[in-house]
Structure formats: C-alpha cells, structure tokens
Amino acid sequence: MLIGDSIVKYLNFKEAVVLAWRGLTTIRLSHFLENEDFFISNHKMIIIHTGINDVLNGIDSDAFEDAIRKVISLVQSKSSSPLLISSILPAPSLTTTQEEKRQHFDNILQYVCANLNIKFLASYRSLFASQGKKKHYRKKSKVTKILKEKIAQKTLTPVSVDPLLFSCDSLHLNRIGNYVLTQYFEGCFKMCL
Image (cartoon, rainbow, N blue to C red; front, side, top):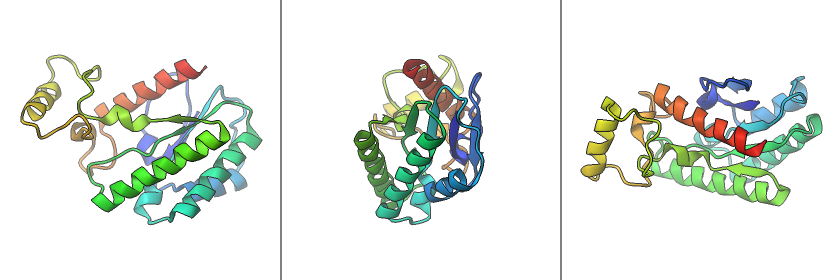
C-alpha cells in the first residue's frame, strides 16, 4: 500500500493499492489517519510518501517532525505491516529556498526513521538525470536523444533532477516519470518483503 499526495496518484502497481490526495500535507495525513477508518492492516507493506505540500505551504520544521512522528505512530497502531517512508521528491519548479527546505525536511525524515528504526527510501535518486543507467528510456527514443544532448552540452549534471520526467507544471511527474517512480517502488516492494 502506498499512501501519499498527488505526486503518487498515477503510479500504477500490479499488486499495491495507492491512496492519494491532492494537496496532502503530513499534518493533514495525520488527521486522516486519526479520524478515518483506513483498512491498512491487510497489506504486506505500507509506504508513506508526503512532504512536498508541507514545503510549499510553509510548514515549519518542528510541526513537520511532529506530524511525521504522529503519522508513523498511527500507522503502526493500525497495522503490523512493515512501514517505509519515502523521501520528498525534488522538482524543477522549486525555488532555491524551497529546495533547501525540501532537503532539510528530507533530513528530518531520515533522522526520524533512523530513530524509530524505520526504512527510509531515497526515492528522489530515481529522478536524477544522469545515473550512468537510463533503464527507463528506450535506446532510440526521442527522450534519450534529448537527454544525451543536454548531458553533452553540460546543461544537465549527474545531480540535476531530470526535467524530462515532469509534467508541464514542473512539480508532478509525467508518464515517463510515473513509470520511473513506479519501477523504483516496485523494486523496494520486492527487496523489503
């Protein structure tokens, strides 16, 4: 089961349920989990993917940390399934300040996960432009050609998020980006079970 914001709404899994809400913040997710009857106990694994809306809505660090701790506690009280926390994805549309806050919130997620012995998924890595591996592109596709040209022109670096994976709003993933992130999470499902 994958619970998250609109970033994960269109991920397509063979054997996993996706619950996604547009504009979901971690605080709002904690309220949902507290007040709604979610059927999360019957799943082999639960992944939480939230945080970008906390960044965009100006939630402060302490409130974010409190909310993620509450989410973890609520999920663990409703299910004995393994819980994994996904990183907040970078996006081309983020300002420098927002990107710094995203990284800070990711550090909070990693710290909380390490403290509570929960697996942290560095899902943001799947969106980097140049990893040496481009499994998600067909060898002769137009996207691969554009990507190779941009890397050759040094307009994309190994640590750049790949803009070709995002929709026109530069925040949500496009079809290829959804495929890349789905493949990442499916690998996590296989590895962690």
